[in-house]
Image 1: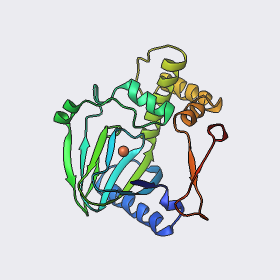
Image 2: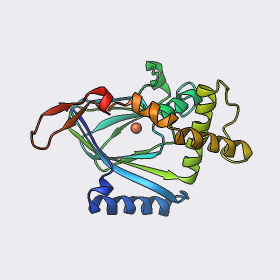
Image 3: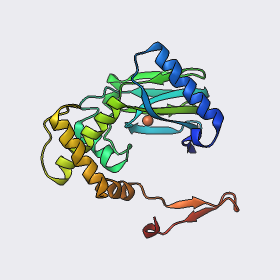
Length: 225
Ligand SMILES: [Fe+2]
């Protein structure tokens, strides 16, 4: 079982307060740029559950509440993470379709995360998780800052150049005329629905839960979502 309860700050004020307090504490100990958006989620997962090798677009932190999990964090550079891979995540929203080789582990930071401990890692660092043989409860926080948004816009622009126009992007600059041209290009693609369409196709919703029938899964026809 792997339950991911997302955006709790919109459901319960106490999570919203907690999130604010966490970000304030970050700000007090680092020169973190202002956070423009943030989310908090609760992960409840079974003994020995695994999260496969993936990377996330926003800044991330993982806070362990109960149980123990081994977290592997890999460098955000090739071959662990390539520009093509991050562009694919931007295009499809699929974080877990990344290639993984067991020898990558020699280059990973591996930590057994205990209750009361937290981890965060460089932006777009791939990571994977193996639960120990116990129920795990963890909080995840994600945050967006201006530099992170610019990096994702640049990658979205590069993704459109590579996948829609057949051009291999040469620059990863997040300022200057080239960057703003990509920002406009990806905004246009987004407005035209090119990015969202691909995202929906990659991540179909296949069932819903029915509050009136606990435990029942309502299958959805694929063309209805
Ligand atoms: Fe993640």
